[in-house]
Amino acid sequence: MPRRDGFVAGASKRQRRAIMVKPSRSETPSLADLRREIDRIDEAMHGLLMERGEIIDRLIAAKQKQETGSAFRPAREAEMMRRLVDRHKGILPLDTAESIWRVIISTFTYVQAPFSVHADLSAGDAAMRDSARFHFGFTVPFVPHMGAASVVAAVSDSKGDLGLVPAFSMAGAGAWWSALEFDAAPKIIARLPFVERADHPAGVPAFVVSRAAADALVKEVEVWSVRVAGWSTAATQAVGPLAEVIAVPDRAFDGAALLVSVPERGSIDRVTDMLVKAGASVRASALVGSHATRYRVSAEGARPLPTGR
Image (tube, rainbow, N blue to C red; front, side, top):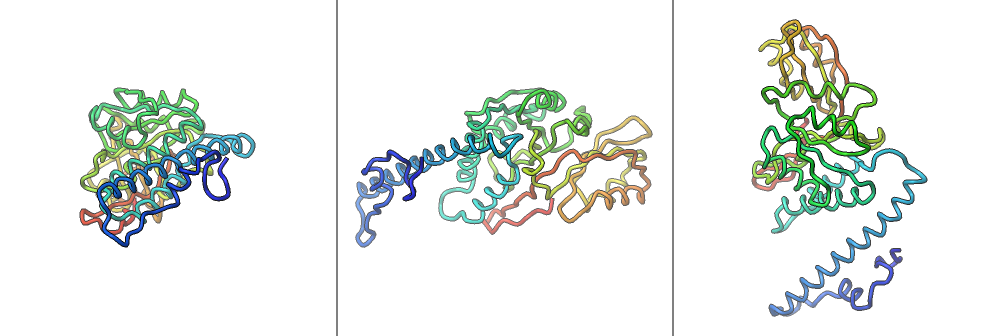
């Protein structure tokens, strides 16, 4: 159990000195001094990870009494990543810091409630594997699929697995999101990568599909399944400024099945109104998930700004 002074119970005096004592900067250090300082920091980081594990162990016990539902807390994870980006500085690449934190978060979530990541590889094996490993590490089992529908089916049959599905339209993919319309179905709970930049090492856009407690969801961007008749270029242009849309053909009524991501200050009613004005007919709509507003970071490393979607 962690002590009041911040150390893990049982930590040796040497470990405590390593965390607390910093070498003086009053004189130029030797290489040996610098390496000893690195060793001190490494030991401190390891000690803090073990302390985090102790707290997670207590958290598991507390959840059994106070909280039900999935171990995934999308809203909390989004806030943790925002704080990371906002405070990051120095020569350590943001990619590295983001990946380390994602692995820490995912691994400790796995410790609380083991889960697997199911990924649709039909858009490219390497890209989706890179995304899965960057965001969830190697401790969480990886299960490949060929097709989004297969991923959704696997997540639906599981107790708490995650699904990764490309967040763009692919020929022949179909409206896989229609399986999320039912109350008991899993939902879209996140969109990756959370921090977007041109040179992201795992930059393929992907939706995360899973079951999560209602109070754990982040609802900044709502994701809707919409079916329309009379889909046209005019309709596409009408909704483009209001929402991010994935469209696949629907044979009925010359229509389309849409996956519509509505930003925080938008509304699905405004989107459907614009569709009607553009000559389309809205046949059905259903909320199939939500996720956090993404952060977009410039190549110059400027302060991240919400994308609005």
